[in-house]
Length: 454
Length: 90
Image 1 (cartoon, rainbow over the protein chains, first blue to last red):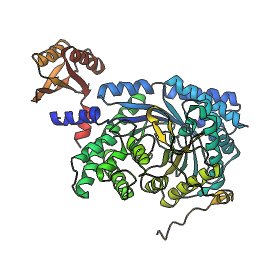
Image 2 (image 1 turned 90 degrees about the vertical axis):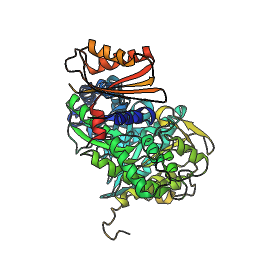
Image 3 (image 1 turned 90 degrees about the horizontal axis):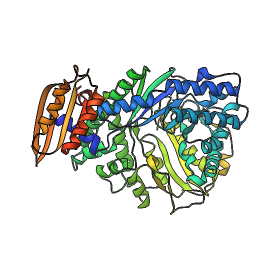
Image 4 (image 1 turned 135 degrees about the horizontal axis):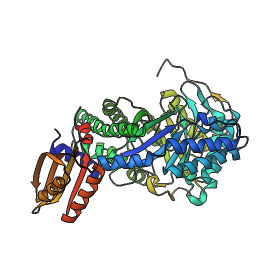
């Protein structure tokens, strides 16, 4: 039988170290919502989402109460909407109509985000894909809870540079359209290479076409728990450090597994995967930056950061895979800037630069995340940043992503406040040398060779 | 129904266990195990109980115990035992 110390250890993790389940996300296939008119598709989409997910929030709250574990977010991911609206949407505004229906459905069921206003264009864009991408700025400006993503590359297909160029412009336009609201639209949009089909985390969640009709995916978190655990082995060698992280990751993931199984049973929807991620929040003691400091760095960004992060990420996975039979999604340490107080501090101290963040994304999930850049940054420069990050993903056979916020009217030295889980971000300098001719070439970067790995 | 773990944490005082046990008895909840320690004047208690014959579900028990805790100045939590089992047992 369970003993006193074990019970208090678990409760201490929850109450003092911010252990929580970050999200229960229902993935819903909307492929059967295709119709012959836009009105019909809108109605089908609304009905399907509000039927499948109607008990999600209540079930989440019940589990929370019965097990005494906070479940911070309840969310929905859907089939990439370019596939669902493709036959009936003739203009970007038609897609915006669909976005508004998604927003309404999200509000009806009480979730706080719905992801999947997406297109998968890693090799080429259909007309519908292009219309959807062009509609993103308006869709994000006119809805509250809809999140959007575009997959522009993969290890198997290469990088669609036409899409990358277009996305650079889309990000700028999204920032412009939401400039009275801290350019918040850009915080709801992410561009991917090798996007996973079963990611429960926003803004990049969508329900891939390889998935079943509906599925439960759960994202766990717990940077605070890892930080407190490794405090106890300060000064010990890497073997001891790694063991400690692995054991802690195991415990965190087990909680996620329990919640996922319970949610799946109660909702009558199959369990998909656990996403083993260390997802920080702006709250004190819930930071990946702080873990890096505890490992022995003055600030995240100091020499050694990439190695420390690679080790951390690997141990989290090693501990986590033992705890759950099905692991998927992004699984790794997140390094968003605005959502992590110690990362913000590292930027403000001058320790962490965009280039170092880019290096760090080679060894962890997921990419350049929640980074505010000067509003004057050119669309082509943003496309260049995206191309670099996509190349890292393509060559290293991993998911990479970019979620940057050009803060319109602001420059290095200012900051943007998003509030809530999204936090605030100091504006980081971007290399201003031109990459226009590179971006304007157009076409596709070919898939890489899968041998001669150096 | 699953077993429930009740934890009580707070400043030590007279009648804490009595208060919790009275509530459990009057709601037909069977106590299977009790352990407690007092460190630095702080009272830590854990009970494993079986609510199978109770008319109340774990959510109600949890809410009512929380309220009793507030009345006597301690923190009382009732949680499904599975969360501890899954974390500490392979």
